Length: 222
Image (cartoon, rainbow, N blue to C red; front, side, top):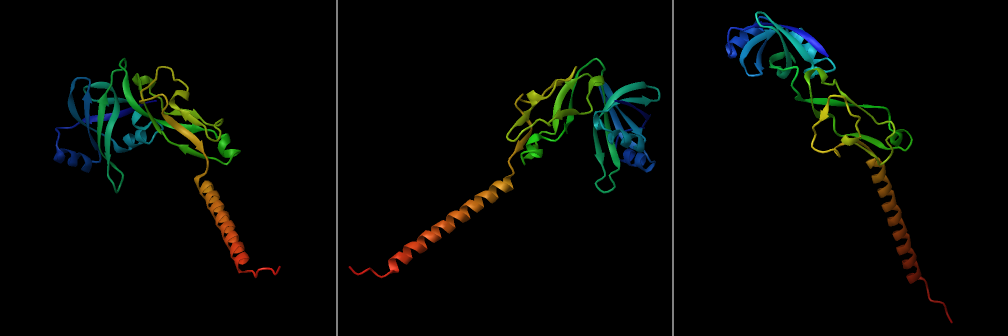
């Protein structure tokens, strides 16, 4: 996905300049990367939030339109939110070259309901929710979908099981990295163990009571 974002140059860096920019209803930002000097800019907050809240989020390829500089392809490298209002306080934009691969973190989504959950009473554990990949800017996937519908009790989906995506290389540490698994319900196992312990204690008590009764019984006359 590619979005368009209008930007305006700011006079300078610094907290006071950033504060004035926010008072004017804009988001202060910095444009940098690709061996060029960092440039202070500002963008419209609603337009930026639409991009950040889209399915591809910060991985959205943006055509940044800056007066006097033409269109520049960028990614949101970092941004800061107000902890109370959740408004964007600042954003860093990184220039990208369309012919150079870059590393990005892509969210993992799961598809389907595992057999182990639906038919065998298991519990799905979704363990790895993001994967680091390398690809050209135009090939950044919005997400990586993993089909778990055939997953049975005790089985695991690993990174090596994820379908390859053209132009995308997975960079996570190991192919056996666990994405999700279907395990036995821990609560049920604990309940079964507690029931077994209770039955064993009851049997032990009955055995002790029987032994005590035998000891107290009068001896038969010969």
